[in-house]
Length: 407
Image 1 (cartoon, rainbow, N blue to C red):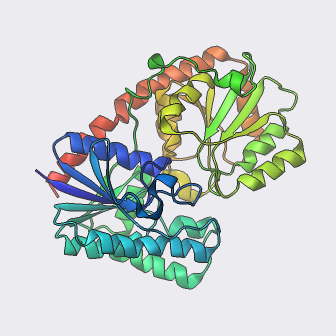
Image 2 (cartoon, helix red, strand yellow):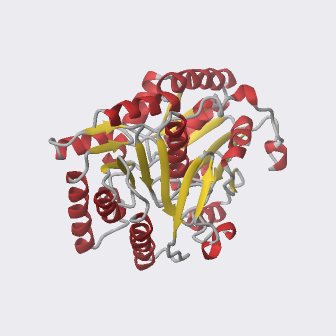
């Protein structure tokens, strides 16, 4: 039976898209009879401080849902400066190599990128552990960092592009989270095998029939007649959430429309400042919650709001928050062009589309949905049916096993 080591900087008990996606895949591969182990950092995201349960290396090995997890140290800092980020990334590059070199042998080592720099550790470990390297790309870094203006240093970008090429060249298999990522890598590296390993959803966990309300509306001061537009996830540079606030300013005469931004991230303070300056009583910031609470939150909201900035880079992006919302039968208000629109608007008919970074279009679509509850309900039904058929995590894991067997 095959043995796979997954190398990732991010893993539960942290909450977040990559953490959840990798863990759900690992659990299913493990249940299939494969031996799956995880090499990861001491949990610290998103607050950038080591969880109390894991401080001072208290937990070096643990079992999470039957999957063995090895922990190594990492430098963390609340500073968002480039030096702190690099220390964060490279500390785990070193400690993961030091910890991983003694773990034995594997058939495959699968590394999650970004952070791309973890490729240094992955390439060395794959040789040391006699494992074929699988390079899993969930974001085209450094291309995305360059186009978003997050990294502007030419020397650092040049180093990153060279590392990206080396990682791909040394991989037995490259996996991409979206068809856009797969297409981009295939075009640049036509001699490499690139496989679409999409994100998905556990449709048995995110099932609206299993959950009743826990009073989310009442607890947060919302009225029964309010139409709740919900964004849950990182409050970051890529999402263009400033557009949501500008749309909210256009909706002050629509008191039934209430907007929730649940999460944390590098632009949260900026967004709160905009909210204050514009006097937006219809925008509400909430803290992130653990995965097991999300179905209850989604149960009580009306529409899932998913924006991104208007960049060609995001034509292949599918934000992971879409899957859970659609599985919970929530209508989608999507401000993402390309692949996400193709799947969930054009094919699934699971919601409405608005032009990214166009606050007027967003406001108009909010009004359309808020005035048509039956439309909201039908779009939600369409969405759940679509993800059950095309993005079921069990089927994704089964297909991936077959791909590894042929690698």
